[in-house]
Length: 232
Image (cartoon, rainbow, N blue to C red; front, top):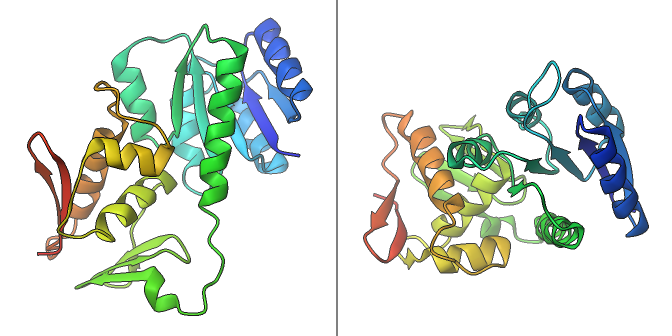
């Protein structure tokens, strides 16, 4: 049974959401206070964390930032905020999805199941030939077995979603991949012309790679076509 920790300070909404998810086969732990959430998540080790943005004592952004240091499950924001800036900030901090309240329970359930399928697909069994799962571009090494990126053997801090995107681009080096191709491969959805999640992750990856002055690999924007990973 998949486990969810729901961090929501609206007790009535939290209980209704929890009851609906339990009826659909999930184990749900509810926490109302942001200050207690990290301890609860550490203890429960859930598959998915659902975060409200405005929480008592510690806000959802702060929780997401701290969680992404060592939590490898899914993070989903469920909030009343309709501000695009909040949406982008949540994705930049490592959230996998951002849903605006009010949301129909069946839509929330579908998004949770989609995220779980994505997380399950990321589980990579140890292959017989690990060379196929390691990409090397000069000092940059991308390891799909350990889901780790190293530069000069030093680990690069990267979220799970960013790793998926970088691996996809790097494994198709020098090929242009459209936003539609990237979204279908990463999330199983088509590009609707407004989804900025890929652009946000690209910007984050560029910033992290640019911190290494000897890094020659670049992610190039090809106007009206998509993105390209250039080894040199």
